[in-house]
Amino acid sequence: MSVETAADRSAMLADYGTTVTKTDASTFTAIFDNDFLAVDLDESEVESTEPTLLARTADVSGLAHGDSLTISAVSYTVRGIQPDGTGMTQIMLSV
Image (cartoon, rainbow, N blue to C red):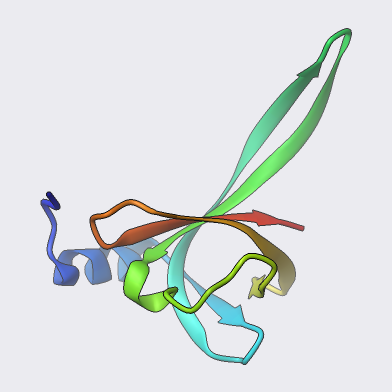
C-alpha cells in the first residue's frame, strides 16, 4: 500500500527530478542517479557506474527494453523496468 499520493509523487519529481527525453521527443520528469559500482572479478575489481531513473509509472508505461532516453545530452538505453506497485518505476539504464 502506498503512503504518498499522486500529488506527492509529482511534487517530489518537481523538486528533485530532471527532464528525460524519449526517442519520440516526448519528455517526462524523473530522478536520475548514477551510483558508483565496483564489480569483483576474482583477482581484480572493475569500477563502473549504474545509471538509473525513478519515475512515475504512468509517465513510463510505454517504455520497453532497448528504448533510448536522453538525459543531460547523454544517450542511455533502457535495460530494466521495475515497477514497485506504488505508482513509481525504477528504470535501469546503460550507456
